[in-house]
Image (cartoon, rainbow, N blue to C red; front, side, top):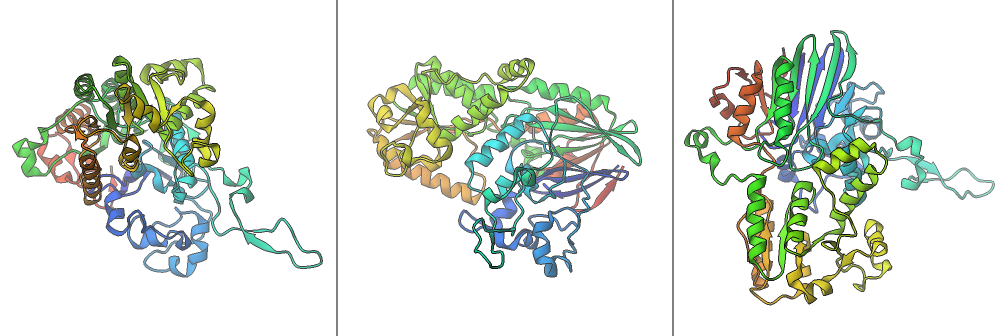
Length: 527
């Protein structure tokens, strides 16, 4: 076995990990590095689609690897890509035998869109559903090519041709592509069910196990061959609502005779702070979030605005249950409604056992529940007519289970309203008296310049309307340092490889029996 890591090194996110066994090459995650991307780009300064993958390669956002990327983004730029420093050529040969996704966060999956069309992509049905939701609701063109494939720079004949003249062509748009042309080989992988590959070194078995994170569908992998294993944790936590999943995974990992573990370390501090124990300050579990949120909602008589991670079903369902407990209506965004609806539609076609298990983990509300409504913002002309809305938002008008600013303004004390940074202008329509409204802040504190700027703007809006803001009531989606050390000690792999962390060197202070390897980008590690 050998490993090559091209992302998630000395940074949080952007994981890109190759695990190679014999003549087989497996890629685990292929995500966007937020920190590297933010060095060069912003909301209105983005990589140019007209330049294929060159902008990404030039700035080091994706690795320069031959036989990995789709040909339609190579051939038009062969004069640049075929030579140094890239040496990437147009070829049908694919070095990736299979791609495996841990979860549907962009720092783990966004650059799947650049992989060759015939790359087998393995993910569980939950991550698949979330990415389908994102595809339907996002304006980012790259996200539309994760599950589908649209040949770039394609030319097709015009539907109307002039008589007695040469065929006229046009640039293809989405309606010009056949369904057979855009399909990627998406393979839905099941929890705990091994997948077997034949390699020159024998049978390779890859098994996915669910884990707890801030988004449903997160998983870890065990890769086995010849009586040994490599473990890849993905992102996980042990202080959430599903810690038992991680405990079960620890047992499976121990039994696999691990020669190496590739582990996340998001919350690991520098060595000095680790030795002083500073990392323990301000830790909150999901249970703590529930207790603090319950008291906050119980004690405030007026309108409560809440901001939480929009794809964290655990958190969304928590605030739904608290709204119901205190006889409020939890008013969600159309986008959150669309996510829940995607799960409902997917479950309609699944086995009863899967449905039962899913509802046991995530008890989705019934859309007829009066305590669960959609907050429909004004669009278009602002008069709540069908012509004002597009796509999935237009469908909400047909369902009817929605409220507007007029409803909330009339009875503010009866609402727990989801409101994030992009909805701040709604405060003008809601027009609440100063001191009557509370903002329940249930997201992570800003940790980079861009987030800090946004938070300062949010604070100015709240100040302008006389809205009080709670202290942060949030539980991280990543394992605590103490929980991580215990996790690694119990699994007891011979080699520990930290990724998704800014401080891999601190792992050497954990007192682990295994060897801590500080990985270098693109270096091959053989076991």
